[in-house]
Length: 540
Image (tube, rainbow, N blue to C red):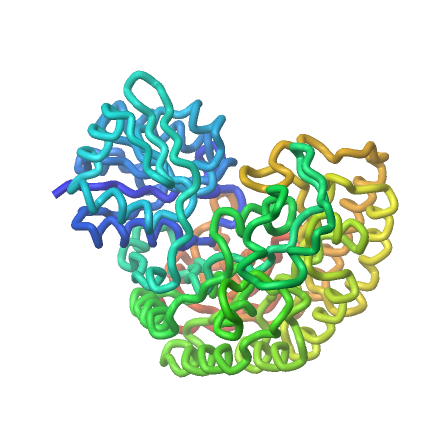
């Protein structure tokens, strides 16, 4: 039986994680389970585990690496070590494999582009092993949809993006026990896929390769199935995002498969689980339409399905007792009606919820393909806050088509965000990604006085520091993860319901415990100092 070493190199940058250390994504877990379903002996390891235990490489025939564009240096380091220790096939996947320049620069045999379920089915219906598939495909120069082959002569055979996975094939159970190779997995936010794909099939007004919207209105009206393809070929979704192109319209996983996955995670000591979706409120919304769900705002959320789902989740013993916390991540403002906000608040009170605002200029939002206005977002924030949730807001700057007036509107809007209860602003600088409308934009297409961008950045930093200061004297539950790498006698803990990293004094024997902490002071906009006032159960 062929043995595959699957390595999660996501967010490892040049070989070490410096932020979001407590995140474990679903992609590598899913790929590991898919390999096993085809009688491949696959095992998932965290990047750090493999780098520090190179002898692990000796036990496998194939190295499979999941990585993002920003992780190319860490991935190259891993491949170089593999070639010294082993020398077997190298397979790539994840967001980094979508970048053609990165594929050209790395030593690999095969790479999966986009969704893998259908591609794997096409491979393993003909070949028993990955090595067999590579040898035949590379020698005969065959192309499979969703697969890139780097032949021994260096020629790249690119099958393009993988086909979107049918809804009924989304229900494989991702690897669970393998999470024990991750550092402090018990304190991490473990992502569980709930919805694949995105319902926003509106489009940007122009693309980086010169296509300009003809205002045909296909994106906004008519049969939903016709919105998948643009008559002039503008990719669907927000201009900076590739999710609709790569992953297609929103499709929900089966309720009982999700519950089984979460129950199994609780048994290995998970404490924080995130229901992963480009928009959680798309959950089972496809059941309300004929054809594909390609309208981001209509119909409204499937309230009955969401209530049934969350109602069953909170009956899981570990969740009912508070040992495990459930969170969600993203929602589109235009779907946050009163009913949706009430249900989310009822089941997920005091947890953060992320709202994609991106800009406070409606003109810019329309130009880049956003389905919601600034006012939509403000109203969504008010509703969510009033029902006990903690709104976090995404903003983007250096966007293509951005004007000075757009930046000024966003700067002026930050006070409104504060007054309406936003707890944190996450400010991202635009970076072009493959398969998006803005893929080839290097910088915003208009010249903007950089002092405005600097003013926006300072305003956001000040906002976040101010919000953190409000945490002083607050009592929270946190999970102790590890010793602080440089501050002797200090431990690192993560708020169970998410928030800034908490530094606490204490013995290493507290690692793995849930504790009650009183926040004493703000260290940075990402770190606070706390004191332990009560020790609860241990997860490991």
